[in-house]
Structure formats: C-alpha cells, structure tokens
Length: 235
Image 1 (tube, rainbow, N blue to C red):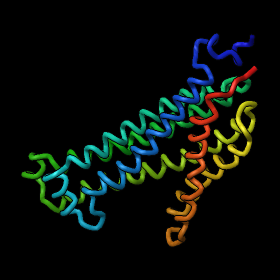
Image 2: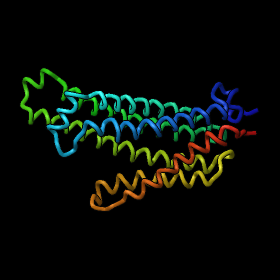
Image 3: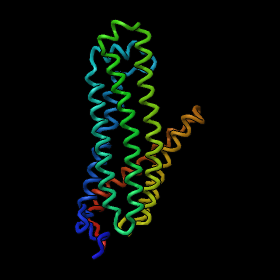
Image 4: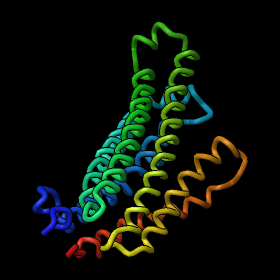
C-alpha cells in the first residue's frame, strides 16, 4: 500500500489519531483563548486608564498571569493541531498539507511574539527597580505601549490565521475523506479574520463585528473531526 495512504506505515499518525488529536486540541483552544482574553486578562487591563492598569498588575497580577498561561497553552495546542492536521490531510496531497501546517506554525510564532509583549508589560509594571527610578507616567506609558504591541501583533497573527484557514479550506476541498461543504465554511471563517484585520486599519469606523459569526466555521470543523472525522479511512 502507498505510504501516503497508509499513514501508520509512514511512521506517523493514523487518520483516527490525527483527527482526535486535532479535534481535542481545537476544543482546548476554544475554551482557553476566550477565557484568557476576556475573563482573566480583562480583569487587569483598563484600556483608557494606564494608572489603573499598572495598579491592577502590581496589586493583583494573578488573573493576568493566568491569562498569559492559558494563551501559552493555546499556542502549544496550535502546534499540536498543525502536526495532527498535516497527517490527517497528507494522503494524496502531501505538499499542500505541509503548506497548511507551516502556515499555522507561522501564525503561532507571531502569536508567541504578542504573548512576549504581554509578559513584558507585566514585568514593567511589577518591577521594583523601575517603580523607584522612573516617573509613574513614563512607566505607565511603557506598560500600555507593550499591551498595545501585544494587541497589534495579535491582530497580525489573526490575519495570517485567516490565510491559513484559506489554505486549510483548499486542502479540505481536495481531500477524498472530508466533505466539501466543510471547505466552504472554513474558507468563510478565514475570511472573517481577514476582514476584521483589514477593517481595523483601512475602515476603522465600519461596523464589521457581525463577521465573527463566520468564525464559527472552525468550530463546526472541530465538531466534525470529533464526531465523524476520526472514523474516516483512506483506501
């Protein structure tokens, strides 16, 4: 049997294991990322009040650190998902599956840069040396600048994530063991991230929040992997 279809013989994952790893990885990310951004880190960062943000990080930075830990877990899951999806789509289209995996890894690398900026903001706010040697207004400005850098890098990362989903939709469309309707909803999910990024910088006054509904396409793909995808076989 050809090594591209008999994945176990190629020294990698079976379709079943690849689907389950990717599905559960996506499930963990679906829970960890929103809690990190909106619950934990949101408790500490007051967008329009640098003084309050620095004070929150100094007096009770635990929620912020929990948020960064959850983001770290999220991005580690991205690496795992990239690996699993490569093996899931490898049969018959190895080169394209590699492109999809590398695109997700590039997104993850960009996201880790944003995480580094978030941790830098915490380090600046809680540094005893800086608090004694730098004026409060300057320190507050530096902290907010790092948080802004984290948000900017997060936007760039999500833009590239949208491109990754376009590549993923192509590999789904060409796959012999995944229904093509999934390719359409994944492509729409990718479009939502791209539209949000473009609108943020080129049409900041335009209300495009509704496109986030299209991002649910990746969740549908996740559910398909966990319910049906792991049962598929390639002859």
